[in-house]
Image (tube, rainbow, N blue to C red; front, side, top):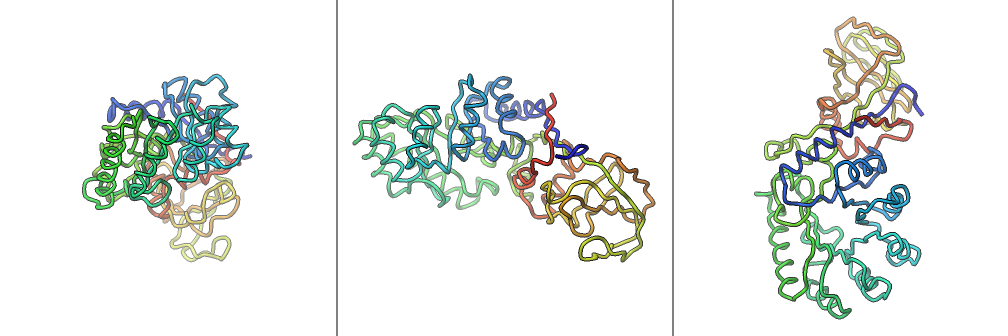
Length: 375
């Protein structure tokens, strides 16, 4: 574990982001997506704060293991936990975990639906159904709506606890993109057929972060807020003008410089002897791909105070080099270097210039970077 490098998570900013979310959708309940270790920010601390301090009572995970960890480490938490993808419902030990810990599997195929409804132990367990309205990933197909309805009725059910689907292209325009328009129409048709069948829908959700930012899907009971709660927009940069989101990063990534030296233009740096594009000061800082600072970040521009630098040479396992061109900048060993903070500019540069989505930048950080929680 690093001693002088850390990821600081400011839960007060998480609270501010949640308040901004509620201003967008004041009438919706929030299903907070915390899969992948709360998008790299720490599953248990984030959920504890969201539940006890913000009053959020529904959380989304990707696997049984994530959900079970929440139940085990927050044993008195009276909140719902959903498993969205790797449900493993056919395994008896997995079924026991769902039943004994009130963890809700999101049913997204016919095999799991038959298993869930035909097993007596799930008779009074919440039925959460996901349909494929056009993303073509997980979800019961639109042409199998009648099958799903008849199967539900055959097993004596008269309601769906939570009905959901997922947009494939909410990072684009929700008003003009044909795929999004088709999915919205399919969703209306899906709900219409289920309602007409006499099956009651208790909860429903269609809006992920990108849709919420464009105020789409707010007529449903729930929204499924993910990336936006951690700060970034889910929209592609060219569509940012369509977003109403003003959230801030809840994290700050800091490290230290461990050496510095002056270079001339063309001076070879590190593995592969990459030539420096200009003269200036090179600072070596204590983050590398072993910490989750990816090799793709080579050539990314990062600000250090009033100076703009550029990652030069290959990113190493344990360190990286940044060039501050045409300057005799003095960098002291141990001097702090803020890779990103709530300002968001450096984080944006990393994403845009390395062509890496924010999700990956967050979750790539390894356990070698300690997390510090501040309020």
